[in-house]
Image (cartoon, rainbow, N blue to C red; front, side, top):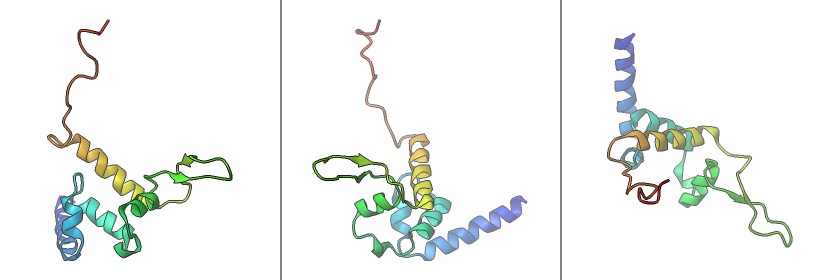
Length: 116
């Protein structure tokens, strides 16, 4: 079983290395070869997203406007989005937070002198 997994991982590495956007995705925090392959497969042709905001909306990570008439500023979570894209971005953010050195805490959340 472990031998088969190693073979699949090496094949995935070879295939992901051939993709033109792979170096960009692999340079982002939280993306390894497996998650990068999942993201690139979910995106398909990257040119269909002209901006990063469009990609964020398509993945369900950015709120969308639900304005109507005089009601403005209504931003809600989208109901139509790509589940595979959201999964890839969610897992990458979680793994980036867990990795040592990626997210550094700037200080205590509460000042010790003011704590009860």
